[in-house]
Length: 518
Image 1 (cartoon, rainbow, N blue to C red):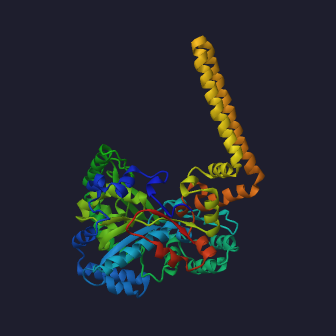
Image 2: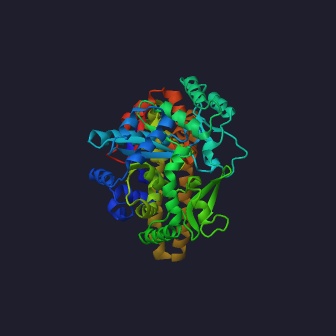
C-alpha cells in the first residue's frame, strides 16, 4: 500500500465544521474553547471540575454495581481524579467497530494523562436510553469468503421504548455463529458472544458484558444510565435543564445563527418548542415539548429521575455525573458539541476537552497485496465497486495498447485542429462542421479505450473477484469499514489478540485515519 494514514477530512460527508476542528482550530475556537492538541487544555479543564465528595462516593458505588470491584474504582474514588469519557448506542453485538476504537482511544488518553500526573480513569457511557431501535437492532459481519452478512434481532413492540431494556432474541446469536463459522477463530468469538448475551440479555446488558470481556485488560468502566442509582445522580441536572428550558432553547437558537454566520450548519435541529428532554413513562420514551399541556413543568419536576436527555443535553448530563476532563467523540459528535457548548456554559459552567476518536481501516495481507498490485489507495474506493473495477481494468490493459490508444487520440486531435485552422480561413461553416465531427471521433476513440479496459477485465475474472473482495472489506456498501462492520468478524479472522494489536496502533498526536495491517 502507498499510504498507511490519510486525513479524515477526505472522507465523503465530512462536515466543514469537523474539518476545521481538526485542521484549523482557530476558526472554531469560540464554539469549543479547549484545543485538544494543546496539552495545557487538559490541566485547564481539570481545574474547572467541581465534584463534591458525596457525589463522587455515590458515583463510585453506582459504578461498582455495574462493574464489580474494578481497580479503576479505587483510582476514581480519590479526590481530584478525573474521567476520560466516551460512549455509544448499544448496538447489537457491540455495534460498529468504531465503538471499540472509541473505547481504546479513551483508555490510551486516560493512561497518558495519568502518566503526566493527572489521575484519569476511562468510562464508557452506554446510550441505553435512546429509542431508535432501527439504528441498533442489527450489525454487519463478513463470512469466510468476505461477503457482508447482516445479523438482525427482532422486537416487534420496540416503538418508543428505550432500546437498552429490549431483550435480544437468541436467533440473532445463532445467525452470528453461522456467519462466523468459516473463520479460524469463529467458534471462539461466537461462544464469547453467546455467553455475553445469555440469560435473556437486553441490548444494554449484552453490550456491557461483551464490551467488558473484549476490553477486560484495559481498566475501562462501563456506565448504564438506566440504572436506578445513576438516574438519581442525573436527576438534579435534568431538573435544572427543565427549569431553564426556555432560556436554553433561546441560547441554542442563537448558537445556530452564529454557526450559520460562520459558514457552518447545525447538526441537531432546534425549534421553538424543543425542550431537550424526554419522559420515561410506562416503558416508553416520550418527547417533551415546550408549552405542551400534557407535560406541565410541575409534574415533570416531581419525576426528575424519569427524565431523559436528548442528543445535545446528554453529554452535559454525563459530565455533570462524571468528573470529565475530556470526552472522546466521533466526527458527528464533535460537530454536535459546537451547539451543546451553550448548554455546558449555562448548566455546568465548564466544558471538557473534545478529543477526536482514533479511526482505522483494517487491511489483511491479501488486500494489501492486491492494493499494491493495482495501485489502489483507500480514497479509490469512495465511489464504489464499479469505480474500483474500472481502475483495475485500466491496470490490466497492456502498456503497448494504452500507448497506441493515447497516441491515436493525440495525433488525431492535432491533425483535426490543424485542419480546422485551415478551413476557418477557407469557409467558417466547414470549420464548424469539422469541430462537431472532431468531438464525435474523439468520443469514439474514448469508447474504444473503455471497451478495451472492460475486455481486459472480462478476460481476467480473478481481477473482478479482487475488486469485489477489496470493496466488501474496505468500503462495504459505500460506507467506511469502521462504521459498517462489527469488530467481531475481524476477531474471528485474525484472533482474539487483535484488540491488543489495535491498541498499540492508537495515536493521540494526530487525527489521521490509519490503515492498519492485521
